[in-house]
Length: 158
Image 1 (cartoon, rainbow, N blue to C red):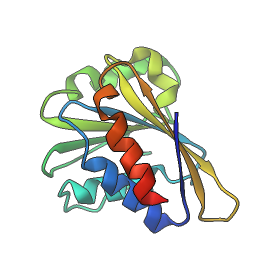
Image 2: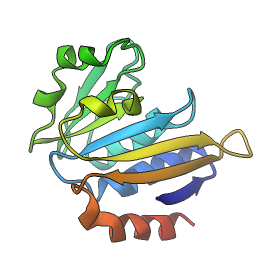
Image 3: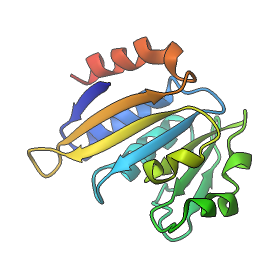
């Protein structure tokens, strides 16, 4: 597990932008953590780094947003799902393809229904109102070849 601390919303966005530099088409990223912990801020920095020009907002009520950039960015929020079977209604398996990257807020809730490996990013509140303790964990083999790149991001963020 890799741990990073961000000291502000801007640093959380910067972390998202740095991670966007190492994603591959077809990647899946689960964003976990309490309400207000930084999942959407991370996604905003991530999306901007990939060339998204539309405002990136939480898809809590729409369940899914799609942003055009260097890659298509699928941004889902499964907080309101009550049964894991509801992931079929989202078309999750169809979204994960070699033309896009998919970020799922509250993704740990549906981890058992995911079609492939992923990077889990867990945001926890820190000592100050803006500080976040971020824990990254690779599940499956899809991200193993980028561990060194993620470690380099950690060093850059320190």
